[in-house]
Amino acid sequence: MTSASTGAVHPIPPARWPDAAEAAGSALFSPLSIGPLESRTRTWVPAMVPWRCSSEGLVGADIIDWYGRFADGRPGVLVVEATGIRDVPSGPLMRIGHERFEAGLAELVAEVRKRSAGETLVFLQLIDFLAVKRRPTREDYLRRFLTITDRHREGLEQGGTDEEVREALLALPHEELCALLTEREVRDLEMGYRETVNDTHLPHIADLPRRLPGLFADAAQRARAAGFDGVELHLAHAYTMASFLSPRNRRTDGYGGDRQGRHRLPLEALSAVRARVGGDLAVGCRILGDEAIEGGGRIDDACAAACDLAAGGMDWISVSKGGKFEDARQPRVGEAVYPYTGPSGLECMPTVRVSGPPPFGRNLPLARAVRRALRAAGHAIPVVGAGGMNSFELCERALSEGDCDLVGAARQSLADPDWWRKMELGLGTDIRRCAYTNYCEGLDQKHAQVTCRLWDRDFSAPDPGGGKPARSSDGKRRLLPPPWERDD
Image 1 (cartoon, helix red, strand yellow):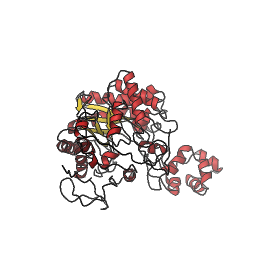
Image 2: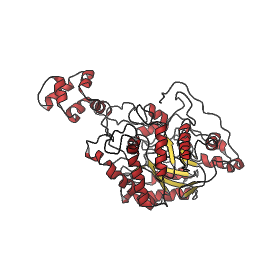
Image 3: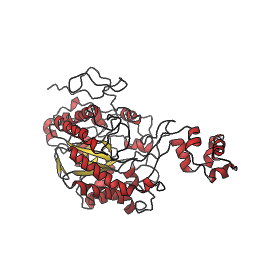
Image 4: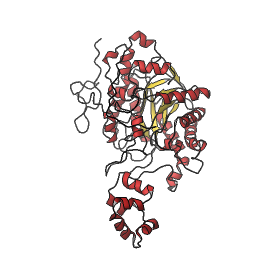
């Protein structure tokens, strides 16, 4: 189910790169229909959040340059980062919850089209997420945030005002304090406050099924207006829609419990999007093949969800794994919990130190199982497989053996955005290969501008536009991978 990091290191396997003729005849560089569109190749850059938008979530030069750099490699599909569908403050995360975001997003799309010579389809990933607060100090939690109840008074065997009860709790040793708190209160104290889809005592959580389909539809309409070729509904990892799909969803309002209830809201969101944008915008989703947490969904749940979503009109399904809040590492006081720090997070982005099988193609069996279930149910939509895809042979084998129909590579594309084009031109020996140490993930965890250790200290090379390399806000790292200087 889950695995931990070990001291052993899996070596990066040697790679044999194709010449241009072999690449031209390969499955990887052959076209594929995705809903109403055709991708020129089966190469796919999944959504990554680089933390380059403004503090208001607006697109500016830094983020446009970022996606232009990926477009230089001419992947078949480039998925733009998880983009918030609500018009709420969320730091430098890209947003689309209002018309004012459309102009910047349109500039981004135009840059991708220009830099890829029109060869790359550009999709926007749409996400909703619930409130997560920073871990408080013990004093702040007990004096400011804990709601005093009869349970606390009875446990202390004393009456008094709420303030007196708070002070008595504060004086207890930690273990005795935790014995008087509910499981939820202990979590709020030790991990920070976090909303879940089961918190139906909160009116805005109870109201999610009524509000979310319209928010996703509004976002898809804005994405189409900005020029995107498609949208990817984020139904994976630690976020709202994945939590509705999870067996841990215990809602009793018809939107939880059994699979029919758990699938209901994602299907209603898909239906609302389709009704709003019609059939000219490609619409797909990213799901979890395995939540990799206790009581979470497994591959049979993923296969059932995939079949229902395909029947509901999805154009593709991208398969991931893990990345949940429930097993995340305890954050420091003053920091928020991050869903990729626990065992399920390691399964989402396995490193060279992961126990068991190496990270290279490690999660392909999940995509294979989902694809088989779809085909058995009569659905021909493509499946995106990902996870440590770092060589031509691994990608080609995944396609030829039926693991997936499109190959996603995030960390390898971050290490070298030109790697797809280098392969296609028969110049694979120029590829800069990812080391799979998750240096990038460590930056993401801090909401710092994401870069790669393999290139972010190289200030000798100019930026792709020819100027001095732009630097991170601390001045220590370059923000864009160096341009590819071809020898031929």
